[in-house]
Length: 154
Image 1 (cartoon, rainbow, N blue to C red):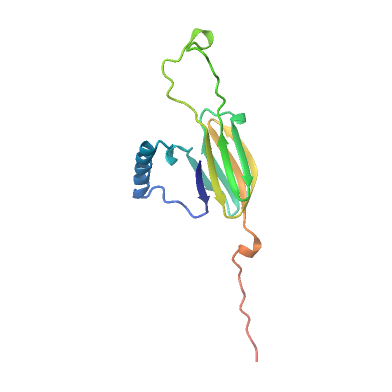
Image 2 (cartoon, helix red, strand yellow):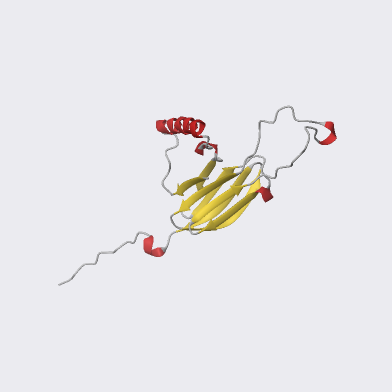
């Protein structure tokens, strides 16, 4: 499970060290047998205006009932569990069989630790992209306040 801190500060994904991280991640995954963090679905975060955001996650091949979105205790979790059709033989429907099947879907869980409360307005799946439209609500006491300076007339 990949756990990411969700912040409005942009990530430096085009930084020269980001590719180094992917290489080190792949090396350690080969040594330990664990799944690399880089294998989690790719995503984009778009700020539409001051409070409106859009998160798009790449989930090619998944259908609506294989995906789950939940928010609990400031934790946004997107989970994918593909339905696996068990077949006893190599033969498939209509006499066809797989010679090679390299595009496999695996179970994934993508989590974001949220600093504040989000309200998901809409979630939809289109052409392998899961899109969540949401607002990012910052409590009033945490918003910057403008203090006016008065003039003392003595």
